[in-house]
Image 1 (tube, rainbow, N blue to C red):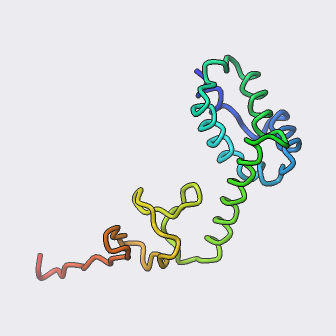
Image 2 (tube, rainbow, N blue to C red; image 1 turned 60 degrees about the vertical axis):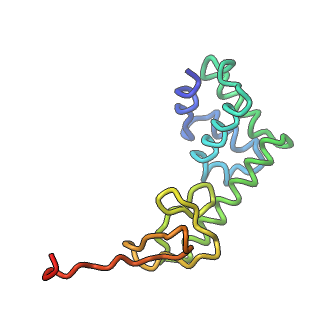
Length: 145
């Protein structure tokens, strides 16, 4: 199926290098190729293009069109990759941030965390979605056990 063909896309190939160069934002696309493939998969599902992707040549050509300069999909992808890059740079400036970022959104255990929330204070802190704050679990003393 088409998912396996798309999963087979890898940056270490001449067509991928050419697609990156032709996109107009090759360095950015090169650094975030895996994420770009994820957006490409979402696009294929959204527009139900999977059945028309029969071989790797079809997938390569469609990805090249997806990233072609001047297209709406390329503009969208460029904007999303810029957001990812900005999120990574801001994350790297804060060494005490423990929660993972998914698609530019801070999350903890699948729950979105507001951007204005403070960084996770310790790696055992739990996000309380109701109170919108980090909670540190109380440790039981050995005498109580």
